[in-house]
View 1 (cartoon, helix red, strand yellow):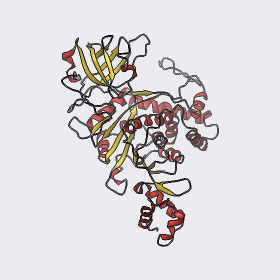
View 2 (tube, one colour):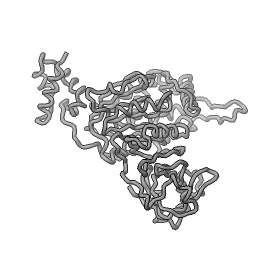
View 3 (cartoon, one colour):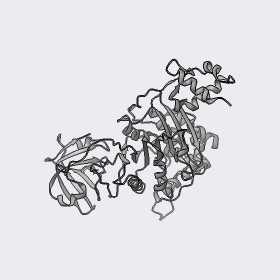
View 4 (cartoon, one colour):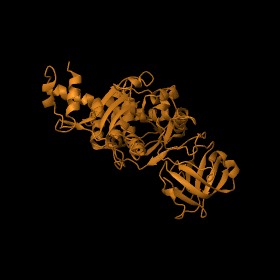
Length: 487
């Protein structure tokens, strides 16, 4: 067995002198281990030593600068990852995996997954379901995670040296997105918790990651795994991720709370979920349970609480929508193959024509939250009671024009081009939904359109009305209203 401490000591001594070469330091380790063994030891210790491996096999210190925003806006799923998915499918079913019985089974698996999610049924991932899940969800989950990481990177809160725990990692969409989001000189100690057959898909996908993205898969349930077992010190985990899994846990609040306790003082807890009403509102319930009004844990994004000591209690259905990701070849092949699908007569279901898009998933639409033990917030702006109306007290402002601060919590929610644009907003005190309704767009109020999801807007002279049909407040943005982007 190699003297690990001797390798560490040599690395610490040389790190500020010159690149650390396993061919050199193996001579200074008792027993003169092979350089390849020294190199592997340095890889395993890279996170703690803050070292990254270069292409020439030497190791140099990782920059102390945080990870920058890379301009994340993928419109395709990377070709290398798409090839890896197809390799798995060919290995399992042969070159014509998308045709005949195997294609029918995969399409059936995807249909069942979609139905189970919609009806909130328990989801079981056998090998076929895992492959169907990968086909349908890898691209959109790959894209979604990067947009959430943007919220952290914009405030320099995403370190270049990062210990990650990805709970319910699935087939690897968030892992691959994280890998591609970070700069090439980042060092990641990545741990996945995934007990199902999806771990086999994940294992294959992770072979596509770089040399400084060190991966470990723990084939245990989230309930059984001990997050405190990660790492050799008490510093905690830099980033805990629950992507599209909280809704599948029996005791999601307690499980999430246990993992939140393992987050470093300056780390982040990131939860991601589909945008459908049930799953999205369930995610928001967990957010509020983990960060009640009197908690020292902050909601970093997107549902900022603008009034100290307040927490929202409305339905909380809030989601972001980003540009589509083009269907990769494996989705197109599965969608274009197979027979026409005629539903049972009188069932009310719609049929399928091959190539109609049923098995393409190009939409990037998701709900999320980020919590921080250190109390950090994406924007450190607070409402002023002497200037701003509070949504918790909106009943007394009905039919009046008021000023207020609000977080933009949706894109335009209208489908009808002739309807007035509608945006969900909140200030962290609301007990019922609030919507900004634009009846006149002009240069003084168009910030309600231009503001990004999660951005704080200042409304001046907005008209407050009660919408009895929807059971919500409408904040009417008209020609007398001024809206500004605060931060």
